[in-house]
Length: 208
Image (cartoon, rainbow, N blue to C red; front, side):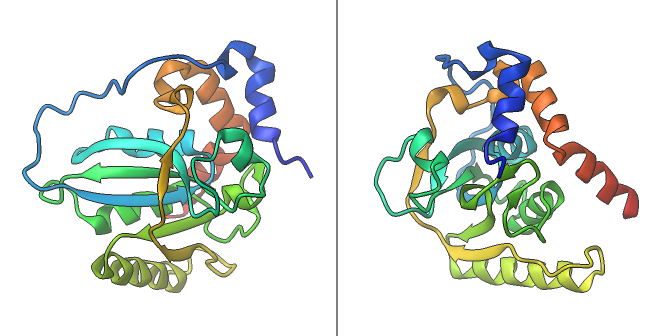
């Protein structure tokens, strides 16, 4: 099983792309919302999920991290072992006056293959499985409804296997994982293409 294929693709392109860097979040959200809410999605590689949400109007922050596991403060290597039960995920702080949870769900479904129970694209293993982690009963209902709508849309021939789970403790990933698509843009783009994610998204959009 090529569990680390996506990671190795990136490393082969440029070893420097795998090295830690110290930086801060670079997206400037000038308007501070009076009321914010949290959404958490696991969609395989968190670099890709963060990039998909970070610059969406109404999303104030998108943090890569780990959730759903059984140990405290896991490291990247801990999670990569597949033994902690964590999944790579992205946690969003958003302004519900500018973007709804339903709209975030729509974006989420467009980034993943929800029929893949073994990971996402080149990244295999439980740590790359997809899930929606709800933070309220309203989020749970909306997530269940959107999953049902997707299943009935006929877009996918196979069953939708993405789980809908109560939110668990979220641990931000190491700093060098944050904003990876901005720090190492060429390496990120090569990974997103080489892993098969981008071509899958293009194919599904053509079917719409």
